[in-house]
Amino acid sequence: MLDFVVLLLLTLTLQTFAVYPIFDSIYGLSALETDIKTVMLDSHLYVEDATTLSPVDLANEDVPTAIYDYYSDFKDGLVYKDETDPFIFSNEWYNTNVLNIGSTDTSITVYFEYDVDDLSNPDPSKVGIPKDSATATELETFYLAAYQDAKNDLLNYPSYFAMMQELFNLQIQIFVVALLFVLILLHLLVPLLFKNGQTLGKKLFSIGLATKEGYRIKYWQHLVRFVVFAIETLFGFYTVFVGYLIPYTFIVFSKNNRAPHDYAASTMIVDMKTSLIFNDKEEADAYDQKIEATTSAIKERKISFDQIKIDLPDEEKSKE
Image (cartoon, rainbow, N blue to C red; front, side, top):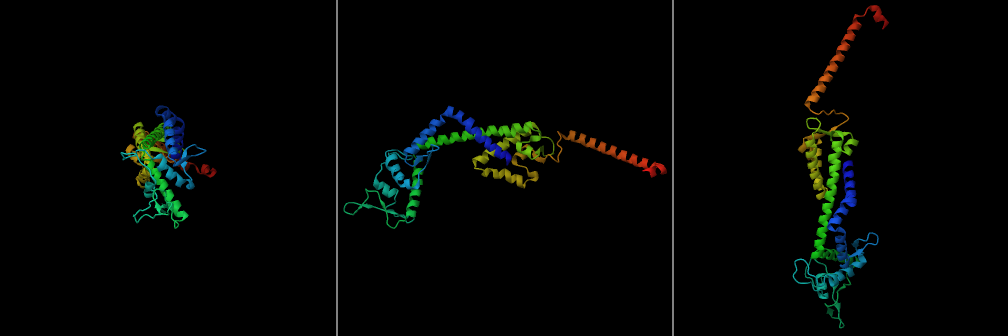
């Protein structure tokens, strides 16, 4: 968990203060964001926040007017996606397609009716008015749904959609570049610097890496483990953390709590407080032989000492 928190914080920091300025100088991100902001504000569907200066949603009381202004002012005369002719606005269109006046769809509740002309006849050329039976809550719910429909419709404006798509792709690239740099630092260079493949979190909790046979991991295993771990991490962020279920499932249910990157690199997590890690089998065998020899020597000395005690004269034994 500590490694993940450090990874995320460093990635966001690097993304904001290093990678973004580089991408901005190359691809003109600031200009692109300004163009998107201009369209959003011109659409009447957003307002500029006084603090952040970013486009934000409207207050509920401003929504009804904004919806009308979007269709009548912004969209009028524009060619939208999958259309060949410019959109032509009229109150009749608004009454039918937004306010649902005259709808025969039984799944839709109609809250509006036609306004009347000078002779008190229904006048489709005027914007519809709420029915007397419509409550304030029903009207607010209706307008919020219509507001969302208008915002979705704005995405069908080709130039706006293209700019949003370009911005999204660049933001993904910025995040991935920052994430890869931090991954290389924390999960490749730091483990190579510390003994036994330890990250900052592993160092803090006194755990490390060993081969599945219990020996010190090789450089190629560091690299393989890092590559697979980086793929897991990128997939986890891409799937909004759902992808992390795969490695954690392996950790919970596998022998020795091994993740996919451990299987790929033939490694496992070990407790450094209770483990001795050797470079290879020969070094482990040499250590075992040394321990065996030391143990034998201690036993021989103990036996010799016991024999000496047994052979002591009675008077010497009585002195003890």
